[in-house]
Image (cartoon, rainbow, N blue to C red; front, side, top):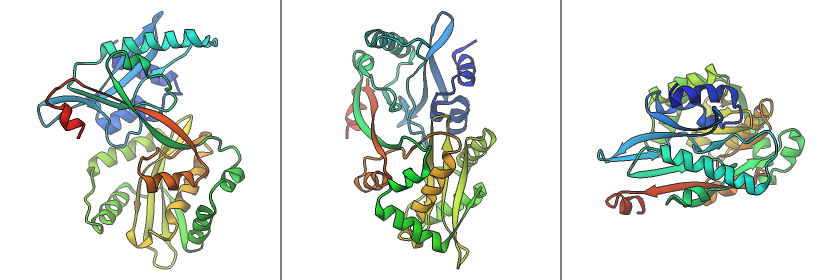
Length: 315
């Protein structure tokens, strides 16, 4: 079997792999032929993986980068069932990560954001990579929704109460209606949508087919207009909101907060965490903090091998 065939089997048995690195999700986001994976084996069994998306930049540079709508995509390590001593764990991680790095194709530029569960990027540093620390925000325990709600700020709870009086929440909005709503809401601000309907339809169909996501939307009870809609997903560990569209007429209605609360409640039926995916934008970071979240650092790993590309990347 080649690496992708081994990875398909690995994903079937290793349920803790984040959804963004699951083979079927990568097929939906990247296209089946546009991603590959490095595999590390011990004793004939896969214990480490590093899927990657490769494309061209400016038509002449080869790069490994983050595909659109993927939060994290990096190393996954399957640890032995017996607890390792800390020193042994670090040796184990170094062996696997170095083995994965050696399998990566030679490219002009590498950039991947690792899941926050990866706390040791030293093996990449030793191979000439750099990293920036970024942050996501996570509700760590969804088992008690009353407690989750009580940890929201007063402003968030008021938004939910305000929006609940004038909005009706529904699920499973049609893909074409969702896409057109997003396209039109961006157009009112002078922006254009950054992804095609074909891309969105492939993603939408795949998450419904695998039962790992759905859409939720809110309708103005008086006008019957769609005020906002979200596409959200989940894996065995966490829920995530992936894409949202909000009519500019409802920006201050609290509808976005209402839908996020409904998403959190629904996600609690499938997993025990909710990841807001993070942002380094101050206003967004403030909003995520107000949901009673915990800040989680993650590593954005980079390496530039092209002298020509380097100043362009660092601009």
